[in-house]
Length: 501
Image 1 (cartoon, one colour):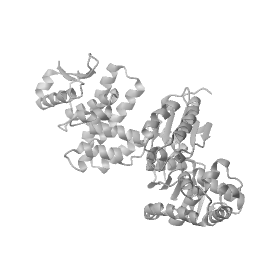
Image 2: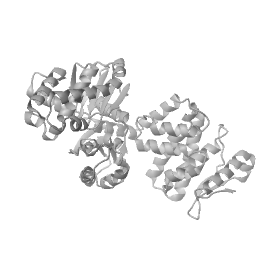
Image 3: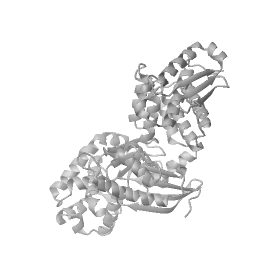
Image 4: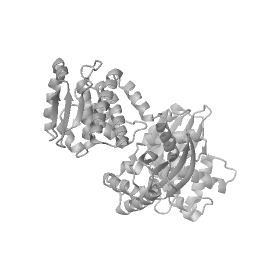
């Protein structure tokens, strides 16, 4: 099949399985045309020090290479790749990701737990529209479990906890399954869920929905073993647990409707689900086929239709941290103008220009959020918030880019040398944001000369700002600041020269 403009693809790199799904996008209506799934058990490759084994890495790379072959011919705008808990916790993941991206052929977004929860909910709410009632969505993955409450398109509570079917199966059920170790697993999961139980109960819900492999496996086994059980109930799960304990393993029970690839992780998922029922006092749960990949698709469409969640998040952060909207808008638009000027001179591909202008737009909107903490060193506070806060719609990598831009927008340029390295586009963006903040320092409407141009230096190293000499004479504070800026860029051996015209 040849990739066409109406095809989009999502790749979900979970802790248990990797999934590729390709859909036709017909005016916002999605039709699945192809899908692949491989049980990679990525979380099983983590040792006690949270280091991924070479074997697990190779297994993942082999799978990604196959996905990459299927995605050949797709453009970056047609593919979104999200990675979840194991990518978040593995200590050697930084060295693995470049290999993974090379095998797949597309960039990988490592998403935060709450962002994963939001995307799961987005998939559920689009495929199972609520009727105004509040729903509790629980998704037990390989390494984490997400809990979400909502009644419309945006959830009201999102939480992610480090308990999953792979990690719990490995931790508690490596040997013979007994009543004691099954109860120990449930108690351990309840201790984790206890952290959020008050919040979730306070928010309240009218019905509960389970998503993804563990919930579907429990439902399927219950339906086969006890046909009267239309939904997941605690009583039904307790019967399954008793049969597993009596046999000593899931394999020996030979549950009907349990897929072979789920046998090794079924007990872990069951223990986590039973703990959720106990701690949150859930009576029954229905199951939906929607999952993270569906949420990725609908979020993807939202971005294409100019309904980008990241823009909403930026606006919410501006409100939360009492940002001056006029100043933020001035800085963002000025930074984008400088970046566009540089990119035109460097013949940067259009898609890269658009991407970096978007980053500068968000960075300009949010560069002063740290002032709400303290004015002194506010850029450091801003960068810390952007790096560590839960920001719906943004991947961790995107948050890091924003944090680096904001950290570099003022102060000593030399501090950015080790962070940015040889990334020329990042240096261009940092300079654009620094100049924007410099020119907008008066916090008044900016009337910069129309002839102003920022260009890469003809020598191929550094930058040149061409600006009206008369304008500089009328703005001596800006002229002094540009002299300081020139001295800063000398420290990183990237000369910044001002050429009055």
